[in-house]
Amino acid sequence: MKTIRRWTRVQSAVGAGIVVLAGLHAPGAAARDANEHEHDHDAVKHVLLISFDGLHEQDVARCISSNACPNIALLAKAGTTYTNAHTPGLSDSFPGLAALVTGGSPKTAGLFYDVSYDRTLYAPTDTHCTGKQGWNVVFDETAGIDGENGGALTHLDGGGAFNPQAIPNALINGVCTPVYPHNYVKTNTIFEVVKQNVKGARTAWADKHAWGYDWLNGPSGTGVDDLSRTEINSIDPATQSSYTDLYTHTEQFDELHVQSVINEIDGKDSTGKPGAGVPTVFGTNFQTLSVAQKALVTKGGGYLDASFTPGPAVTGAIAYIDNALGRIVSELKQRNLYSSTAIIVTAKHGQSPTDHSKLIKNGDTLTKLLEANNYLDPNGNFGQNNTTSSNLNDGTGLVNTGMVQTDDVGLIWLRDQTQLSAVVKTLKDNLSCNAPGICADGPQAYILYGPQIAARFGDPASGRTPDIIVQPNPGVIYTSSKSKDEEHGGNAPDDNHLGLVVYMPGAHHAGRTVDERVLTTQVAPTILRMLDLEPELLHSVAIEGTRTLPGFDSERDHF
Image (cartoon, rainbow, N blue to C red; front, side):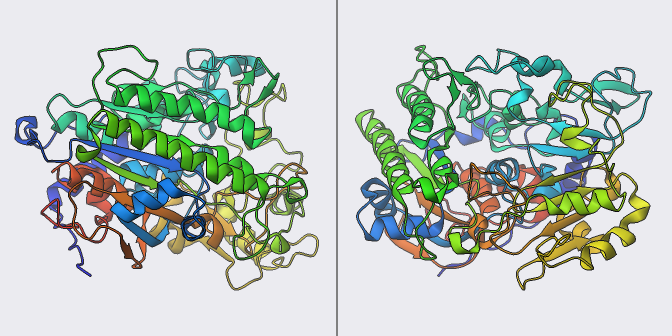
């Protein structure tokens, strides 16, 4: 197997990247003249990135071997399958997608979860930045104006604007400045790099939240020419429910994205308006599989055993996403674009646990333990719970409270960082699942803090990184929810081991399988290499030394 070398880092480039990450500013000008990147007729002119959220490597292997996903199988036969691909330490949708489009882990991208905390930010109402700092940043479905004052999510586009109550402020060069999602991400994206370095380039993306995913634009705020504004948690007028109640309903939402991509392949914008031109880099996210995996096993959701045998809902969901991929590839072929379009199929995250026998839902014992010991407000007045109206993200939240975010992981931002040692001791004294334990006593569980967390995720003293990360035993979900049996967000084996299939036209070794361990951060620099761009134009790639996927070197087609 040919191993890609780590690109030599230029010290000045790293320094420039750090300056960018420190200031919530737009990145600098492109490092290369766009005229250098005109493509000839047989080069890769377009890259299509597809995230089938929840897609495990085992799902890919099983469905190919059983002929349950013929279109994924055809792509794998024409491309390369990576059997040992993983998320970079956290697997929520924000860090999962950031890995794919920035080449960075949360350490440099600054995205830990769509609901997180930043000690440096001021409340949305503090427009002069004179009050306390420390804000619970919520860039989920309530980031659209429909969510203002706790309003119902009645519009598919989230209301057509940002919810002003969701936008905190930062003091930048002495000026109190709103922090939109594109200001919040700490590094640039492939969309910005391609627009700045490929003459006439166009970019497009479609995802599940209409306004929270504004961060895909990158610090410039303009990286994505066509960012489809679709909100999965909006109320479907036909059913008076959100699109996540049943996986078959989620298919209807994902169909909007299929049509967006087909429109773009046809040279239109995502809405079908003609004249836009085929994007250079474009893609979308699918939620159907994720919703099917989370559904209760007693109602046909999830998997039947530890071998990833899909239950009825997952079986149906895999059939749907495979059919969607087939229609997209068919459109590329019909438009004579298949021979000039690279296609990457992967996922932001997996789902845990697939083995239902490992499922433990004791409730949020982690938060309860912290509250009981007065490390967080004992009445729950912190984080997502700190609004005076009880409506999430309505702008009335308290400042400087710390918070905890839990799924199959626990992210803890202490209200008093001097209590770190005491908190860690309390956690270590209560590792078992017995009350008031946190179910983190197994060999695959751990508690990160201090120098270890700083090395992997950045220094908590800088304001963004959690003080403590608790990875419980695989199978543990910090919830008592009766509506889901799987979750993601952490670093359990089932939510970080993903499917990854890469097709590049004209590449050698079609049908190749690579078993070498790779991270999803390696997708972003690989996309740039496909387009003959230097991977280190991505600041996270330069700082973290992210390699391209195995098989790529300085010559684009050595694969």
